[in-house]
Structures are given as C-alpha cells and as structure tokens.
Amino acid sequence: MDPAPGTLVHLAGTDVSVVVDVTTGAPTILHWGAPLGAGADPATVAAALDRPVAAGAGVDVVAPVSLVPEHGSGYPGRPGLLGRRPDGTAWSPRFAPVAWDAGPGHVRVSARDEVAGLQRGAPRPDRGPARPGDAHQPG
Image 1 (cartoon, rainbow, N blue to C red):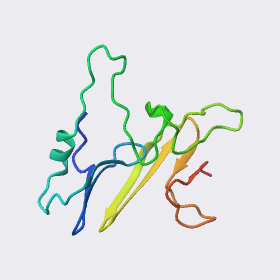
Image 2: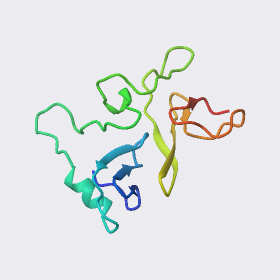
Image 3: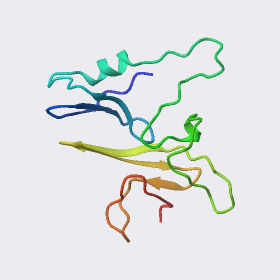
C-alpha cells in the first residue's frame, strides 16, 4: 500500500537518516541508517522497501514491525503494549493514528483503539505530556 502524501517523515542528521511512516497506529521505521541526503524522497525509500505478499501465502498484507508491535495488526511476536477492557475483551489492541507532528529530530504520533477504548501518545492532564508507550483510557 502506498502511503498518503505527507505521511512519511525524514529525520536527517549528519551521520544518520530515519524515515518514519506515521500512517500506522504506532510509527513504523522504514529506514534507519546511512544518510539519504537532504533531497531524498521518503516515498522512494518506501517503494524500494515494499514487500509483496506471495500468492497463496495465507496472508493478505505483511504485518508492519512498528515501534510498538501489535497482535491486532498481525505481529506474531510479543506485543509492544498490552491493553484490554476490564472484562477481558478487546485484548488485542489495534491503534489507528489520530494526530501526528514532526520537527527537527522528533516525531510524535497520537493513536487510539476505539474498540478497546485505549489511547496512546496523547497528553494526560494528570501527568503532562505522554511518554512513548503510554496508553490510557481517554476520560
């Protein structure tokens, strides 16, 4: 799937480049390595790294390996964040991005799972700005 325009962020340093996809519930790192140069197009990097799904493989998309892997997105390993409703339902959160911003050296993504009633990355009035990996039920 091609990301929408403006949803790939290129963080460039003198010794490293990081390309982040903010369309997933938790940011997905597409490239973390050698500098790509000031004029690099993040969409070209994403296209070069696209992993097609083999016909008859039993899956219709390759699960993204994000900064916070999720069972709800198809990640088979240990999830990066656990959450569920008090009655034990909605035990496999799948976050969708609701807002993001980027600046020199940073990307912040707020995401929500409507079914589980969880939100990640949003400010919390009782503690100030959220820290990476925070999840809470919105008030």
